[in-house]
Image (cartoon, rainbow, N blue to C red; front, side):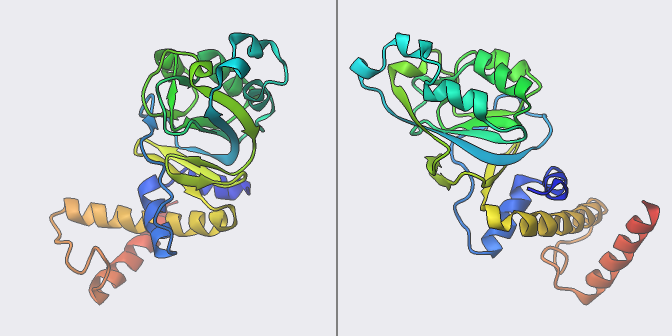
Length: 238
């Protein structure tokens, strides 16, 4: 992902991204059932690096498996690229944790951009205190081994009913997490910035008491001219 694309996406909302993707025909790119552990953090942007869990089988998933340096969960934490987002397919099952604060801390220290699961995290309060965006369904104390078996790294997964392919661009804010198909990231970033600029204009006018008719959506020629003048003034003041 281009640095300019990342910067643009960090300046827009998941709501704006969702609207533009809908214009392109994409209706199901918002990961369902996940929320930030700590609202108010900067917008999370990064390319997807995935980890897939399947239902645990007791004879293959004793706690001793964590001693294996090649355990997929441990490998994912140690190989997720700098600037990427670790996205975990926990089958929408938060009854056992997808990860905990130690693994989240390790990802943060390695320069990973954030972590998302459609399951839950243990040590959720500790993760929330980190300078690290994290999104999950609900806190969950049991280790993932009780219900989840880590199987695949960096393969296509489903997370919160959304298909996530390695390299897709993940954007997370206080509303939740959007998945942008990789080949559309530059276009979405560019258009979302333009949409955000117009939304700022609309918000300003609505707060002044203006009706949304002809303004939102923009159908009035007079409003179009006023927006262009407003935009020029903003650009001149930068």
